[in-house]
Length: 110
Length: 110
Image: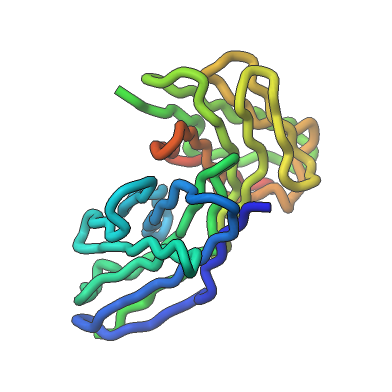
């Protein structure tokens, strides 16, 4: 069965610090992988996606993610977070169907 | 261009009343269509997905049903709403590495 897991429900980092949000998937082949961000009361915004090629994917707002087949992971990173990055982040996996992780809520300390 | 229309944006319904949320897509053919629900402070739960006209897969047992009468139309329904049906409902479509989301419907059952 296909599934996606975000192990961290809530992460707090200081403004200017680096960030890594974890995402692991379970599937027998390479799926389509996505990261979305949701601000309070808003819809979903696509940050980046991976489906083939270079395993390091650049997205909007300074985010990047690296696909690691050996670890079945697609972790999201940002070198230096801004207060406006505070939001809910969702990893999603698309193979037979589009499935989301539970989400990671990011809080930024000033 | 590829767009997705979902309406209404907000809805307040009494317990026991029926529900019909509609989602239509443009700019694509034979997409996979999805309905998700997001309860307050929770992640995105996949409710239904459809790979073609009249083909509906239900992910969780619930008080809701879905139908796909046309290729680009996906409807979420209920005969009698429960308080627990309150939440934020998102429609989405996916073809391969592309996925688009509607703006969502915030349903409050009172």
